[in-house]
Structures are given as C-alpha cells and as structure tokens.
Image (cartoon, rainbow, N blue to C red; front, side, top):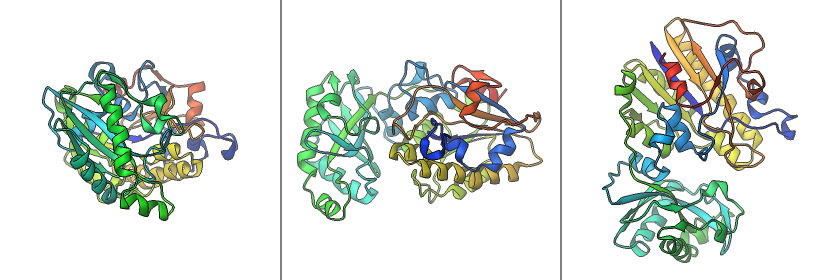
Length: 393
C-alpha cells in the first residue's frame, strides 16, 4: 500500500468578489480532484490548534502526524535543520528574513523575492560587519535565512514579516529577553544594507531593495520521534521551502532535491509529481508540498492562486491518479491553513481535506474538494495530526 500526502500550501480561502463570490478552490478548474472527490471522504479539519498561530511550520508538523502543542519549538530550528545546521544546547535559531523596510514601516516580506545570488552577497557582508562573535548568519534561498545566536534566548515575542506588511516597525519589534540586542541588530542591518550597490541597482530597476534583516520565530531543536518508528514504513519528501524540508529532516524522511522546484509561482509542478512517483517505487509514504498557492495569497493575487491550484490538479494530481490506477494506494490532499487573498495573511479556522482509499472507494453525489464542505462535512477532524492516523489506518 502506497500512502501519498499532498499539501497545497495555503490553498484554502474565503469568497472573493473578483471570482464572482467563489473561493479560488471553487473557481479553479480541477477535473482530477473532482473525480477523486466523487469516490473519497471529503471533510473539514482544524489543522493547527486554535490557540496557536496557523503557520506553515506548526501546521505541516501536524499534518505529518506530530502534535504541534507537544513538539513545536519555533520556525528557526526547523529551517536550520533543513540547512544541515546542528544546534548545541546553548544555541537559539531564528528564521531571519531579508525584507524591505522604510525607516519606520515594514513594506515587503520577501524584498520583492530577491534572488538567491543577491541575497547571499548581502547576508555574507552582514555576517562580516553586523554579527557579534556569538551570532552566525547562514544564507538560504531568496529571502529566507537563518541566524544562530549562541547564548541567545527564545523567550521573546517576534512577528512574521508576511503577516505585517504596512505595519510600523515599532509595533512589531521583538519584545522580551534580549529585545534591545535584536532591535539593534535590525536597525544596524538596515544602515548597512540600504545603500549597498545591489540595492542601488534594484531601485534603479524598479525592484524592492533587500535592505533589512528581520529575525523571528526563535527556538531550540524539537525532539521528534522518527516517522519510520511511528508509522512503520520509510518515507520521502518532495518540497522546495526550508521550513518543510526541515520537518522532513527532523522526522527522518529522505528529502529529495527536485530541479525546478522553486517554492514560487514558477515551480516545476510536473517535476514534483515525477520525483514523487519514482520515490514511491521504493517507499510506502511520499509527502508532496507545493508552496505556490500560499505565495499567491500573500501577494493578494486571486488569479495566481487559481492558476496554482489548476496546475496542481493538472500536473500533480492527474499524473498521480494515472500512475497508481489499478494499484493499492491512499491519497490525502489538505492545505495546511488558509491564506486569504483579501487579507494576504494566514487565516485561523478549518480547511477542507480529501481522503481517497483505492480499496474502499465511496460513491458521492455533487461533492467537491473546497470550502463549501464546512457547511455539511462528511467528517469533521478536530486536530491535524489525526489525518495521518486516518491515512495509515
């Protein structure tokens, strides 16, 4: 039996006037998901505990079967794991985003999706001229980087840049242990990077400058029991973003590097499906994560979100269904959270899920995989980690 978990990150939404009162899931043309919904359990799930922020880190941890209330320590250590960074007991890992900010306002959480090459040059100079001997910056992909602070503290409240565009910096500066040092780090990064030649060039090209480093979501390495020990089978992960790759690493999954997988609108959906199908030949569990719908939500683009959902249906769901047709397999399709286009932020509340079991096909009438299921769900799941129990029941 093959078990597939497909996570279209942030695909769930709210009705939008520009889509005629439909959500992107409802407006998108998804013939493959529609066909599966007709023979599947389609229900409603509260992925992340309501008392927790519905971030992709805690939410995907839950979807993988680990209760975030028990295991979650912060986004920083998860992404550090993805980059192969080993933390000591005295190390605190922060996610450190390269953002665009004016002197008083956070303007863009991704610095206009700064290129990885530009970001590496900026992070390198920041490591040389900004960090203390106890601090180390590790360059990642595009705007996503890691700050390790030896002797730092996780007892500080921080704010995710993608949730605070247009907000004044003084409202979202770190609060708690060592807050003054973190605020100084942010301010000095802006002074250092604002007029760097890369940012001078970006402004001339009409692009947002990558002029500020923003540390957030600190923590120590979570202790997660290996997935193989929990579920009794080996597994692989197909993903592009470090927060998901880190969860795969911490759970002991094989993390596959897929050429063309970017974590953005231009990701190679077909390559993700192809790598997942190959991985399933030797493993009983494959997790496929697609970031594009979430990025479209943060960008406030209904059309890009619809396009991403249609691409997932056409280039991932379709090939999976065709390849596994006639064999024993189970498929779970579930967003990790909402990312409403209207707010450009993650949203609290349930999301729809689809669970297909080739050995026990259902016969539904007019059932769709979309937010309408919340009004009359076949099944209501109270916690995200329960879905993995269902997939392996």
